[in-house]
Length: 318
Image 1 (cartoon, one colour):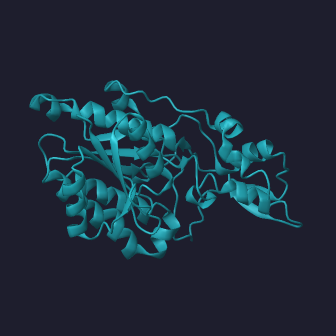
Image 2 (spheres, rainbow, N blue to C red):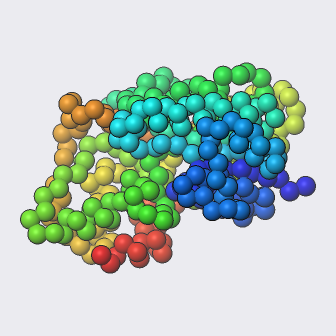
Image 3 (cartoon, rainbow, N blue to C red):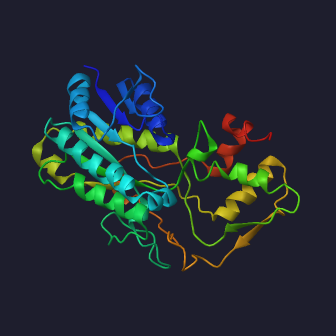
């Protein structure tokens, strides 16, 4: 019998690719969105409405739910802490209660920002000490605690991922994609822009994350023995090994665009101590648990993807 996957946040940068990954693997797919929902493929569902969520689960009867919906921008979380908590924590808790009560497997997408990212600490194993450096990271960490609250066989897992890039409907969907616009703005006369050249980032393609979500679902749903299920890890991590600062990414993209980078200066000073949103130095994730499970952790080469992707073409003309 064909299995069904339900993906929250299916209109977003990651959710779209998770939906595609399951669809290509032959699954029935159902997505949820809100402001950009496109019925019937992507249903409009307010995840804070427990009745609406329950009705959808009862109708779709998914074997797995991948929870991608989130406020994932640190500055936006800081500007609206109540909204960030409502979506990243409370909606996650309600979704977990609804899926676990129905025996539905839940994959919760979290972040590398649950770790402090101090110099010399990375890479972080999945069981390493967590201490979020900002409100965004804390809300995602609280979301993790919500979906890991119950013991027994794993009806939920956490999948931590770093900053993402990939096919986007709007460059602003990704902190990486939007750098194309920054480079164009730097071409203006007398442009003087500052770009971080301190924090270490591991940009990971959304298509790769979608593939890993699908592989996790297959691995966990195929575990029939209760003892085997109890042994499966509840926290997993996935990342590219490509390492850049934001300034180095700008250098790479400017080369692809054939544009100078004179209007952007590198800032190696690190966090501004007076800033309300602090960012970690290096939160590189270990993928050991995925590898131990036999799940493929290869990723697309960051530089090569931009050279061959049609997504690049839309950025080459201003």
